[in-house]
Image 1 (cartoon, helix red, strand yellow):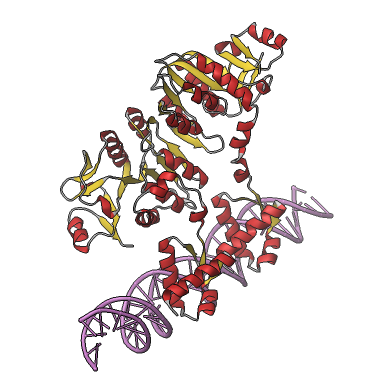
Image 2 (cartoon, chains in turn purple, orange, yellow, blue):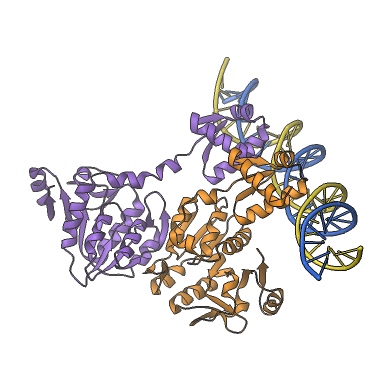
Length: 250
Length: 250
DNA sequence: ATGTTTTTGATTGATTTTGATTGATTTATG
DNA sequence: CATAAATCAATCAAAATCAATCAAAAACAT
């Protein structure tokens, strides 16, 4: 039996059972315990599985990679409406920061014939931006494979090379009391930095983000104007007490 | 039995079984082990299969999606060979700079099971890097839509945040007297900077780049090791007078 | 027919993989 | 908490596989 063949057997076993013992693997493959241990070490190094005492379990990394396309389809129409309105705020000659995320990406087609410069930390944005012939800059940074965002100190540092007329941010949640938030502190830091560098900041968030709270607070609602949609009228009124809010409806 | 005939038998075997041992092949073909080894080497060079210890398996490379520009890239086979050799120079734990360009991009599949950190200024590289689960950073900078390279002062600045064990550069031409060169002064500047930050620099260039001279000189041949292929023997000797050169042949 | 080139199979020593064994570490059990 | 059982990483020698070399055989050109 070839080493590669054995590796594939192990991964197939894992795909079926989610978790396997070394004993099970040696039974199936007829290889010694030592060999299987070496295999597991190797496969873990590749990131294909996670070792646990006595065996190994499946690594969900590969499944998670689909998360981008799935997310994208959620509330798509709403996101497009929000993005369309946001784009209407852009004037010729503006310098814009486009945050990573599936909402802000919808903004790009509406910028096509405007004479603007865009800076983004979202990798999926880049392709669309160049296709629409928009002069664009990317921040540097570590690639967060799951979301295609650039993060880390390098991203912050390269952001500081710019000033923005407008800044469009995506968030995971917004809350009357707890402000705008997102799960990743690194991404929160990026958004804070972009906000500081911009004359005006907008947060784009569909109704599903309302009252959601996740790990990292970005800043209070008051600090950026909120563009959202399909929120109950009274909620919009409540929120408008503390921030500038544009409530659309589709 | 004809060599070609044997090659086809091997590929057919592979199509059926996905993975075969050398023993299996010798049984079917009645050829010696040495001959089969030679066949496998040849077929791997063509990109028809991938050798593994003890046998061979169907090449994933062909299954994987490639961007249009890659498919259209000239001297692809040569570039793959060069990239493969370049990848063999990479050790676990290395920090690598991967220059933008169609040659360096071929290096990525060969890095997939190595424990490395990659920094690149090539946008097309990013997708492949993440697909292979490689920890990667992007330099910031202006997007040069034509080549998908990141350039300008922001790119230079963010490069200076790193140090590299190895630096793999692409060029448009190399010349005994005029050194390595490329048409865009901005890109030349990036390459120079990356070279300064790296312990060792390699230039990857297929034979079509030989004796080409374009607008911007990057640096003299002596400053970086040259990996090339299909160059006449005497040319390799001449070049080896002034620089460290690895001449492959396909 | 003769000399040249290419292909082949055998042989070599180097490299890689393997399974057994060791003692250390972790987990289970009383 | 202490002990036993299971699992672990590290090491080593045997086995398998490898690339490189060389001479014989085959294919080729002249």
